[in-house]
Image (cartoon, rainbow, N blue to C red):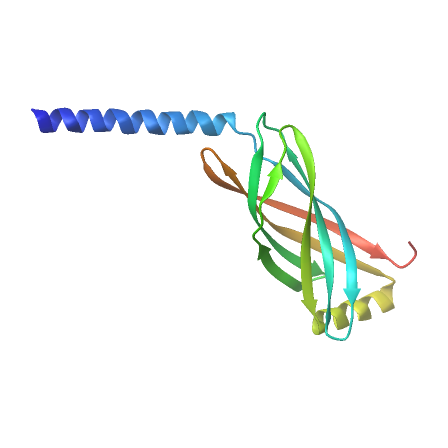
Length: 154
């Protein structure tokens, strides 16, 4: 009888834990992540670097800690950079935060982008990735994306 009682108690505890976790996840609102801007930092013979500025809104009544941001950057249809940064960023409750993601790319990507920019006078880009936040209910990863255009006339 003791073994059966232990099994029933374990099943009840597991059911309670799953139920609490489900309720907790419903109380959590996803951060809203958007690409705010892309700024070219440098372009040279060896490659280049840019900053992708993410606008992150935390709609929750409590702060969140972001621990990892992945990214992929395209110029027109060519992927020019991919990677991840692991750094702790605190998102204030009911607040917005700008997060700067540094991106480096190689000379082949610079050459293709410069040719396109020289011919057309514009450069279309696309950025996407994932944003990982630590919550009391475990890590949660959400996607973000954005598009834009660099124009010679601006």
